[in-house]
Image 1 (tube, rainbow, N blue to C red):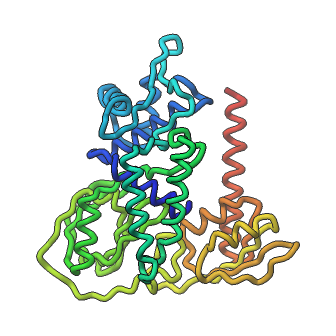
Image 2: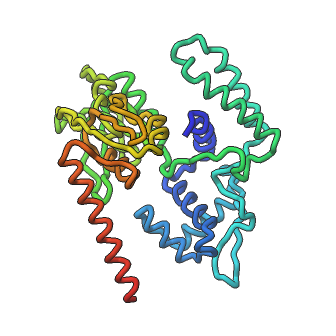
Image 3: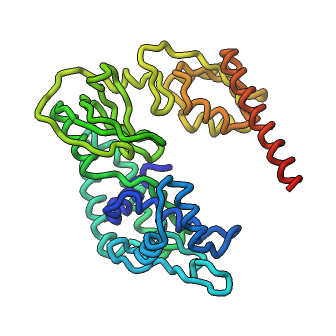
Length: 359
């Protein structure tokens, strides 16, 4: 995603963010259901089942009806979603098939404000920190011009923006920033996926880090005497303390060998050697996989690279995402793990296929 798309996404996202952070994800799921042409006219029960399956929360008919009403009529959200009910099919749908809440129209007032903001930022290109956003600002100005000239802000035909599934609790976000800046300790309660809320514990907050549209707090857990990474969406309660800390933290050094958000404290990196199919080479090189990437060769037989990284779940996901387009050459144990995972997938598919045939 370009820097400009991220900027525009956040402009809309924070402007329309609902007070209940789980509501935004429900709106997204409903939007996807209404636009799913393979399963048109979902019923109330189907929508409830979808939300409960994807979010893990239990909702009732009243919550669903309120969500639909909010998407239709809530002026604060500004969706004005054309949701209709088909009595014959017994389900809901968008009367405008091109509509999506990710293509919320930008008002003339907002356009003018964005223009002013872009103009102000463009004056500070000589400042080292702000100069980094000059190109995204230029792109933003072009997009604003295209949107005004074509009038196609609502149907995703000019600019498509992503809105994160998880709403950021801005009080938590700002509290983390303040505590990081002033080296002030935080008291947290944390609820892991599928687990129970923890007891209160104290952390020294070091860094807020974004990865794949989710925000994480990098902090030293005083009780465990270790640096941990906490998803903001799973911090259930938080409170500033009056205590401060002096523990130093170097973010670049800490994440030097990390691939994604996972860091294995104290562990040496692994030299991973990968061979990509020739057709994948241009894309792989354009994505800047990791600062440690070194090219061994790039020719008709493929792109061969090395990475000095911690072998994390994020790295495994990347390798699997290329399917047969990549081979793990080293280390041998990682190659074996990828092969075993692939065999499990094949066996699982075969088993599922045979069961479907029997049914």
